[in-house]
Image (cartoon, rainbow, N blue to C red; front, side, top):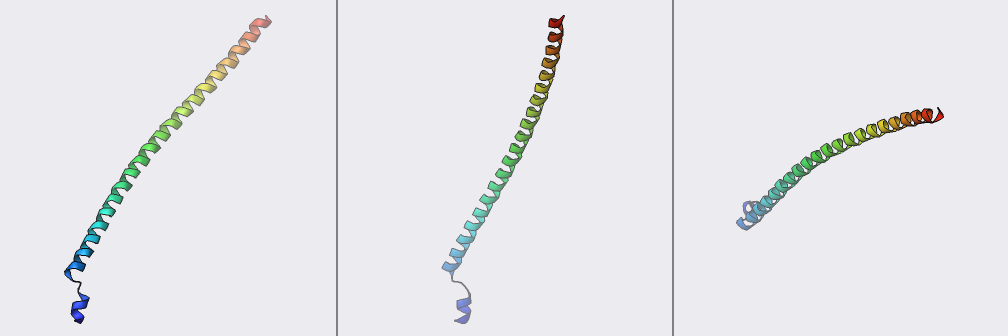
Length: 82
């Protein structure tokens, strides 16, 4: 009886196998989800970098336009004084 009690019976073994299978499935699903999230994060980082580049280009364009306006205002001021 001592040997028998240390060895799980077949129904207990089936339950443990089912639990093990379920846990393995959950682990695999979690790994797939983590992989998807990693890919999404990379895509979002790429989009963020692109948006930052666009924003910087717009800032430079705005600065250039402001400089052109300043020069035109100065030229107009000279013309109106003459």
